[in-house]
Length: 148
Image (cartoon, rainbow, N blue to C red):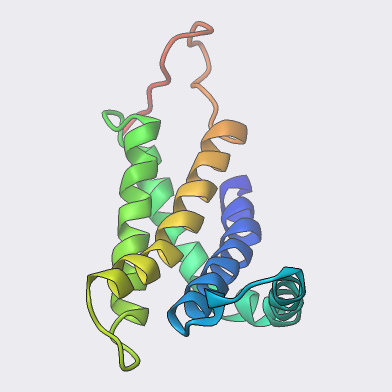
């Protein structure tokens, strides 16, 4: 249960912030930036945070379900699990966002893919850091093993 709470708490906020950064960069907003413009960016982030959670709740749960499935596969180490979850997030966000708008190309795909990669990877890392536990009876320092 803690796994899902971490993904839902961290994923939409981080994803919304990265999406805001990407859209402002793609629109050419970052050409002349000063402290006032950065303050405006954070104000927009705070005011749009409720929508980030509204629209990011289900994708965060889907990424968590993938992380949970991969957690129970004995042969997948945590680093690979984080990379796989982030890669799925990258592909899903890339397909969802990069095909919209007038721009197209590799830069747009990479930037919008990061909107899914960063929150999924950070959430998976936080779960590994604070939630994953070795099975009972495993010696301290031994790699954890799961039953399939």
